[in-house]
Length: 184
Image 1: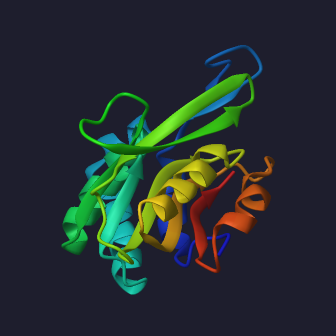
Image 2 (image 1 turned 45 degrees about the horizontal axis):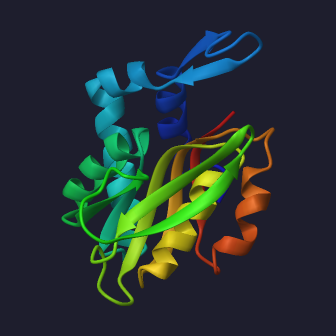
């Protein structure tokens, strides 16, 4: 789905997302979720919505993408009674890891997940804060497959609808839903 199933939730969340002009550079309008996280009502509603999606999709674990995805995914996993798995930047996880490099607008990056994070065929919900160009989520989905997990779905707090993230992810979802709670 491209819009939230609950318009009241979308309105609450959007009302707590602050616009910061010219950050991190002139001409960029940054969407700051810190006010949302600081508001107990909004953060609880977001956490419950994510937990409900994890349960509805039959997920056995919730995956959070570094770094703000951790803040959203970990409490949702707890609320759903599920485990949490972080996908991190290269060099941040101990032990054996699977890695996936991908291109950014100006350069490249590598994400990693621990090799033993999932049992074969385990169903996972991927949670992140923003869907922009889709590169980070696409790399994460490739990592999940490499680690033996099955994608239950992807939920992001907000989608930047003017960027091609959704189109970029189309070939990576294997029929799993991509859901956004707020589109800007």
